[in-house]
Length: 226
Image (cartoon, rainbow, N blue to C red; front, side, top):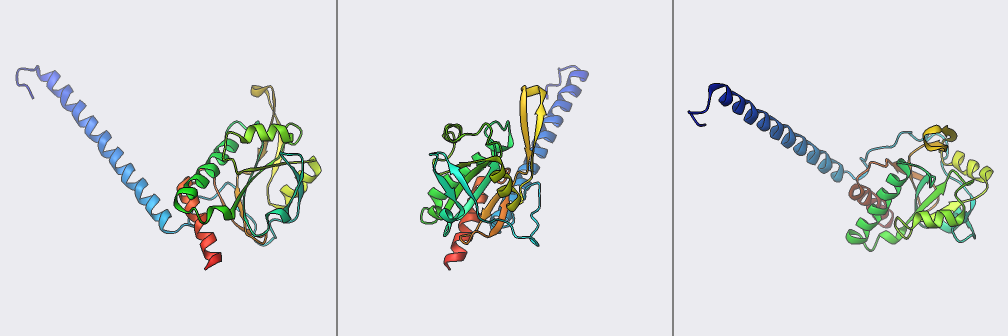
């Protein structure tokens, strides 16, 4: 440090350097811990962040349904037998968690296409609206164009949606939202994974890193095939 610099200035410069060093040290510590957490999760593909609602495994989760696809044709649970349904329940007007969930699913599928191209076809991504009043087949079709092209959109009469939501342990309710000059839907945020027989297997959080979700999905498919 320049000896000609005034003592007060040298002290200020020293404090600045110390502050930068502390920030860098904290940043490095957080980075290392984050990488360690990711490594631990990757080692056990099922040890993933869970969603806001734990599923009651004492009661059966899942069951038959008949809803309407984006082409206006009926879609039933039987259409997915033999596949793993990766299900997101939400609605197209959702301002945050629904697009986050669909992006997580989309990116997990893209990751699987790169890393596990022979396994990805076993996964059937499904988006079920909880707002059939606004989410018509055409509205769902337009909305889902922003995400992975394989995602199936389902809508239908509200009583059918309610029956399915109950069967799949999904809670939802309409709430007024003055800030949006419309209503919102409060709902569970689980990304559900159903097995080839239609039985519940596990669920993910919308914050689950797509690469870890892809690894967990691949692990499930490999487990069945082994």
